[in-house]
Amino acid sequence: MDWSNWVYLGAGLLLGLGVNGLLLRTKKPSNSFVVTPVKQQRIAELQEQLKQTQLAYHMAREMSQFKAGFLARTTHVLRSPINGLIGLHQLILSNLCENPEEEREFINQAQERALKLLKLIDEILNVARLEHGTSKLDLQSRSLADLLQEVYELTYMLAENRNFPFKVLLPDPEIQIFIDFRWCRQVLLYLIEAVIAQMEEGSIYISSQVVSTSKLVHIWLDVPSEAVSQSESIDLIKSEHLVCELGEENPRFLAGTNLLLAQVLLEVMGSKLEIVPCLDAQAQTEDMIRLQISIPLVTKGTEAHNH
Image (cartoon, rainbow, N blue to C red; front, side):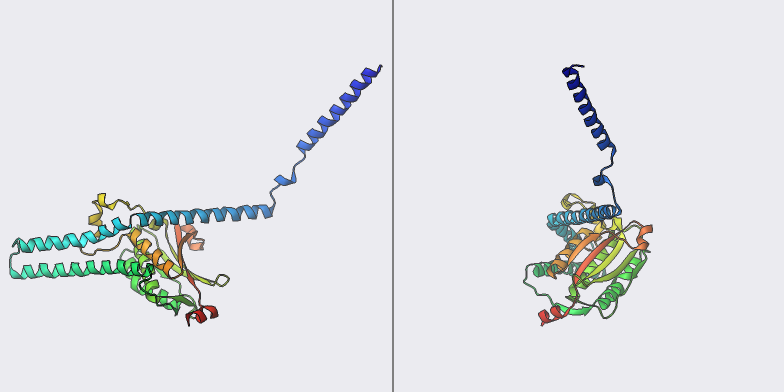
């Protein structure tokens, strides 16, 4: 065997060893691709964070749309009682009343509609004054249980009249929150009215939780998912059918307007409104979503700042 054969043999052996090494390396599992329980837990946490981020984005987008159409929404709500006033005055001025008693009745109805219209305008102006700082909040240490009890007493009939189960889990009476009681109560009324207006079936459940690490109290309003899925058109000027839905006898804000007013008031009070996953056991049997209101918890530092 001459020297060239030895060269070819050596090259062949080296090539064979190299290929064999590559094959063994591909067959051997890499530790970097092994999914350990710790990695699985981390993936689950990331998926949950992604879900919450998506819900927060959804809420921000909805509120942005509400703000974009706020003027149209407000004028549309005010238009309903104004139309009623004009109609009653036209009947009186055209001498279409059968007798003085009927004319007086029309005047009384016009007076009632004017007062309702004034009430709606006052609500909008009061929120606007708070947002721009021309009106001051009365921030005090108040009982969370008293707040939720009063809100329940003011709203349970709205749900009962439409056969929606409505429950409130009252917290420890010792829990104190730093709020403007009147406006915080109004925020909850806005939210509950908005939810009931959108509901077709399901239940409403209010509870709370103290988060001592962040010095906050979460008020949770668990409701059917469709109750916070808004479908109101921003361009309400072209939505003539909504005039009838408002009801001239009882003019009120649309659900989207209520949500917007609630968000503005909470921001002024140093609180916030979010949509978060509803993880309670009772929600597993229903398609529920959670409106979360975060309010400052009263601490020694909060009391000192208040004084």
